[in-house]
Image (cartoon, rainbow, N blue to C red; front, side, top):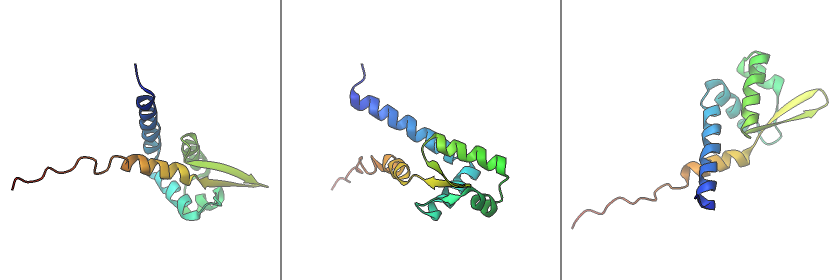
Length: 111
């Protein structure tokens, strides 16, 4: 039987793996990096399309994938659709990757 910590850890691994899989595609990584540079207010989809020269239907597909793993949300203002990077999700992913950094110390040489 798994403990709560083991279940949470497995859930974190699954979530991180999904995010990393989506960011593992060059176009999605470019989109996400562009959004992160764009700031917390988000970037209009049209601006992303023009800047990255990605066809609209292709861009929509890639944004949907980023939304599905919680790295991006979309917000509509009038006729403009904004994509907003989720910095908390990004921070969580980075923290997860660094969580056990340097846990194992190097063995000390014999004196």
